[in-house]
Image (cartoon, rainbow, N blue to C red; front, side, top):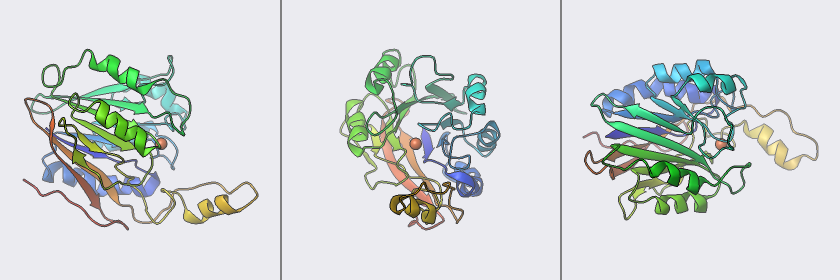
Length: 272
Ligand code: FE2
């Protein structure tokens, strides 16, 4: 199965990059499934139903969220009606929506996507490991489902890598989101799970993690409350990772970064 996971889409610039690149990539890379992290897509804060539907029309199968899940309050009601939007699994009980989603590919394969929130330098969340373990008890890779992807939405590289090793061999991929900076460590772990500490953002990199750099610098320097943070509006880099899995085992055979446009160096997997 060929899965494209697109890193945190930030604001209008990020959405424009989705529009420009996603439909083309879906075809060129013969993708079976596309997952997009959309928690910063609406003005840098949260996701709206309208933007989610645009992403689905442009080729996304599932959208994951994160710590900004409820910044646009309309999503609190909408998520209950939309199984294609996945919020962190380890939110406190009673959170609306679902922490797990599923894609049925055109070939009939099942991809299960789980998102968890990290606990280091993050808001309150339940134990992500225990939450994932409970789901994996009823999902055997290569038997019940053809692929399992975990999006670890977390600040600390150590926490994300620990999740990679912990679930190595039991899921197809563990990928990190939230820091908005792509790491250079996309690789297969010893047990056959694809891993990347952070996929990076789909947004304008001439910024401070997607937000206007001047407003952000002011925040670090000024003794007064800063002005409102707005997403940077320059050309975005489309930042994603391609994961290919073995149909029988469900483990990964390939993971490669995709970076197109904007200020970041380009990367594109060989088409084969
Ligand atoms: Fe986040």
